Amino acid sequence: MILAMYFLMIRPQNKRRREMMEKQRQAGPGQTVVTIGGLHATIIDSDDTTVTLEVSPGVMCVYERGAIARVLDDDGVDEDTTTDSEPEDGMPATDAKADEPAAEDSKAGNRPPGDGTQN
Image (cartoon, rainbow, N blue to C red):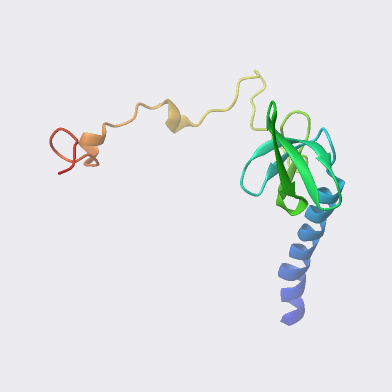
């Protein structure tokens, strides 16, 4: 039972952790990354422990290497995941519910009665 748990849970988790650490180590200037906080930026400079990220033109931030969650390729797509969510016509895929008109909040009972101000 313990051996099965090791091969099904612990080993894959350790493998993902090692892969993530290797990507963090290899990230260098010019690459686009996403931090653990969700910040998309480009690496400007790096050393053994920190990276300098350009958030927008002229705005630089220094982060620890461990704050890099993902390294993106030139198209802004995660390097280790590829998806075919875009149809052949070149238009992005849309959610079917996004095309439906939204129900009014007052009908759904989500808005307080009256003029909308709280007492």
